[in-house]
Image (tube, rainbow, N blue to C red; front, side, top):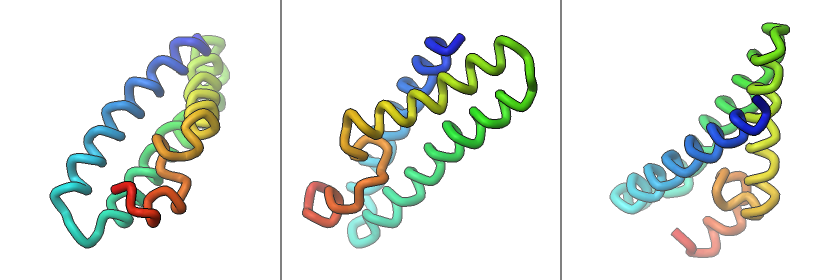
Length: 96
């Protein structure tokens, strides 16, 4: 179930990333605000949802919760925070 949780986070992250870029492109001046809100939502889904699933104390929910949290951490590390929105240097440097 950990691998399923990881895969679920990858899909959620990809959809949120594309949606965030689309919204930020249309907003104009408040791009960093949109990226910040998306980063908070992704962290809440992965870390808060993962912790909630772990506290259910069922074998399937523990694996799924761990997969969500591991997915968020690995995507943050591999993409240097770009895909999860936690690296403000990239966004202030004019990437968006």
